[in-house]
Amino acid sequence: MANKIIRICVLAMLCLCTLTALCSAEQAVHELQYVKAYDTKEDGRDVYRIEIGVSRDRLEYRAGTKAYLPNTLILDLEDTIPGRLRHETALSGSAVKVKAQEVELKHTRLQINFKDAVENHDYKVYTMEANRKERKPFRLIIDVEKEKKRGAGSTEGVKGHHVVLDAGHGGTDSGAVGPSGFTEKEATLAVAQKVRDILENSGATVLMTRDSDRDVYGPNATDRQELQARVNVSYRDPDAEIFVSIHCNAFSSPSANGTETYYYPGSSQGYRLASLLDEELIKAGGLLDRGVKNANFYVMRHSAIPASLVELAFITNYREEQLLADEGFQNDMAMAIARAIGRYFGER
Ligand code: ZN
Image 1 (tube, helix red, strand yellow):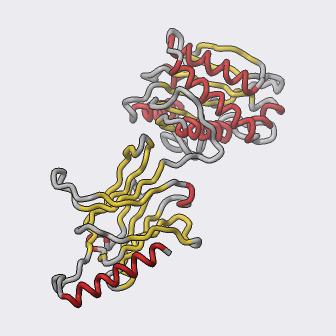
Image 2 (image 1 turned 90 degrees about the vertical axis):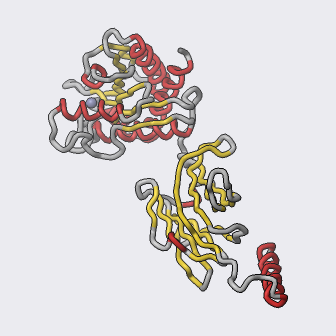
Image 3 (image 1 turned 180 degrees about the vertical axis):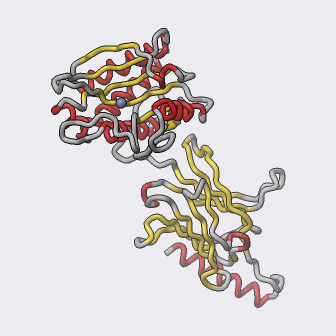
């Protein structure tokens, strides 16, 4: 209602303007100049900002979504032409696409397409005045709050920290296979993704060696190539502080069971990390505590940062295979790992 009244007033004013010939002959048309996106903070919260330069101020806009386009935020801009945004612009490696179209004369519709439903995000649309000092024009701003992973919890002590998570195996390498056919690569990815969601919800930066069912180096690589590729991922984040590799145990006898964690011999921080992981995993999962052990595993030996490898449970044990495939158990293990990581940073 208020919108309508404002628009009627604007129209009335424009008519008056024309009648009294106070305005110049050309109408005030806004032209879109550029679009860019970047991460920033707004009111202390992490936001993804889409900034659109506009040739003049006093832009009138309306923002909303349409039920049949759940992934698209639609902005209707009055007295605006698409200018340089006439073609679709891909932002953030195509995760977001922006398209402007003049749907009626001097009425431009801006469509911002996200990877998932707009309602998954909190967003705010507003304008920023031109800033001559910074040589910035009048801008239309869309701040999208970083997605909260629904269902995932959060934990203390990880905010601002950088963690590398390695979901063991993947792609052509299934890892160990349980008696019912559940694979280690499925369990490790599911748990790693849940740990990531919890850590990100809690303000940490997480790098995953893999985020899908794939080989990190490439199909059918040697173990050494594949494991080194995982270590190499951690170098992509120079601020990475710890490396946590997630695996499931296997043994020829199906009766073998329990949880164990590993560190590289001589690494005191690795030992501390492995101890906290073991403690939290046992508390959360309630499986046999096989203890904290040291081993010469490739990813720990070659990691430049403190590392630990966890064996959540024995996938070759019928009962533990069922647990590993169970989402509730996966959530508990993920929360335990996240909590241990929080304690690792907090108890230093
Ligand atoms: Zn493994």
